[in-house]
Length: 147
Image 1 (cartoon, rainbow, N blue to C red):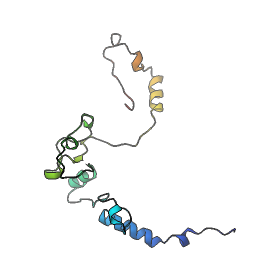
Image 2: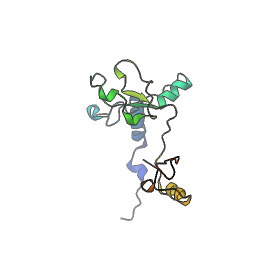
Image 3: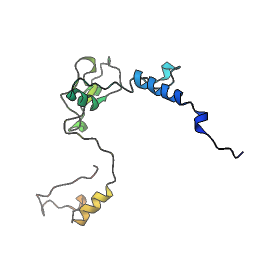
Image 4: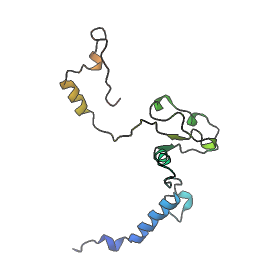
């Protein structure tokens, strides 16, 4: 059979459109008929009360555990959150510590290969950390690439 496959005949665009609209409107992602198996709270309506509240909402992280739990560890800041998560900006009440916000100067970037940066620094006579002698140059600055 040398017939060409036509995607528009096989898939109804209204089914996809209605499914996406429903999921974005309700925040429930998955099969509409099987509500128990769908993932709730995946999408939220963007808060646009003020410019500051919009930025705060865009930089918010949610810990996906129950709000009524009494476990303290997920609500506390970990040492690795230093400079990434704001220690003060969290809501009061049941969501305290479970909803965290990125720090003011935190910037999330897409990963990039470290080889070009290391090659650039080696060309400029950078010393490898394992070969560094502190007595020879005590005022040197250590640079860690991706680590």
